[in-house]
Image 1 (tube, helix red, strand yellow):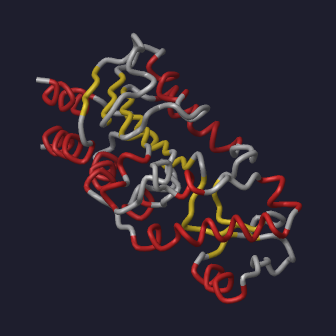
Image 2 (cartoon, helix red, strand yellow):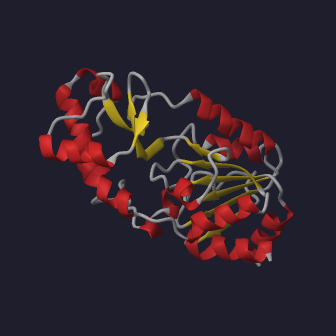
Length: 250
């Protein structure tokens, strides 16, 4: 019955805010970096201020990113990413707000107009001075060979275009996420523990307006006790969500 309810919510909605976390990307081969063997567990984070002031910190940060790069480079979108694109093409999505930095929503075909990557993306390198963005592979190749953090043509420090610890989130992206929450007539959270703020505040902002709020995740989330949650589905997102989308669009 719960799956049927999800289908009906998707069928009735026209402005869905979709919020995604790491749980949708494990099916694409992206490891759980917070897990017992994850790189975030084995390495101390490099704070943004340290990156900007210390060559040793920049080397450490590039080393950490290089360790994870192969997983990101080889990853392909899965059925969850593609189901979200199908909803967008059907005219049912107002925003896709993601905590993920793997770039898979964009690779799957989610439009830049709809996509909000709150924590940035590993699929681009960004100069911290002129903000020019470029493809990562040549920079990772340079670092691997030289063990020296690459520099921009302008002389600025280059860094994967993700939000580092201690670095402020992009105010423009935060506002785009907020606007999505204010426009939505349904909010669906996929594969997130909803424990990282301010990101996890956006589904609640939409739900507190009285629109239906659906959570699909394997394991507990911090919003499970919220009275504004309309439907809570426990299980693998890639088994639940694509099938419901298919039914809703048929």
